[in-house]
Length: 308
Image (tube, rainbow, N blue to C red; front, side, top):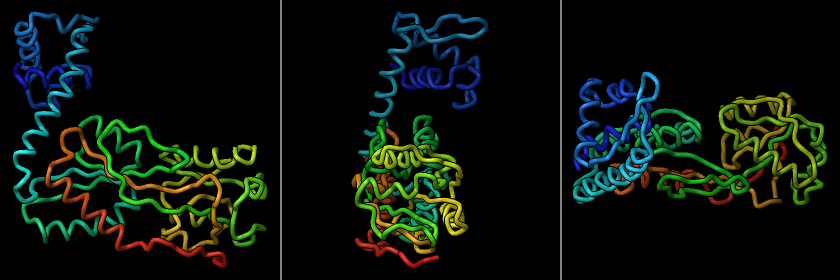
């Protein structure tokens, strides 16, 4: 089976139109059509059918496209495996959320250039749902995402846990609350307080909802920001409460309260495109970020009960 023809079918399954496949592959639309027609002849099966002025995959075409994703990923993995003993090289397309970008990926640029002269990074800032979509669409090679133990992600890509850290509740300086929330009823003081969540990732909404559900009520999520500095500014202004990573610089700016219910932790993960998890450049980057995380943050981060 011709892999280029199979790739054209997989791309049609993903993108939906011949013209989009042509743009993605660099072939003309007629060349893409010829590739797909050749694949049909080779297999003796109808893979496409007319649908208005366009074409769509037949049931057989959809099944082959699903197999094709696995086949192409396996071919990529085999090619990378053969080069495993070579020094990390090539361009690694990376997406990461803002905190990881600022604290781990930007420092990695200089370290990568120093250690591996033939390797380079292309960085993009995206929230976890956007990063996972880019992996689906083959838009990146490696992603760095986070989730919460109370709101675990459903994985569809190879992934590796890099770190686990406590989360704290950032509260206004004058909030009448103890320094630790160990019972669900302790949250009742915030029943009528606005909550601040992420504007680009619903995981924060779900975390707030599940925390407050332990106390039997739903949070009033009134403000949203995807920048932790803005979240901290809103808390400092007395405009609400929010969950923050305990080790973050933003948590040091505000009054924080320990969350000791629900075993709430934030986890940082690396995620790779299928077939690239053994690519030396990808693994070198992931290990560099892991070592940076471990060296930068202590295992136990003190609370900041007096900040205002």
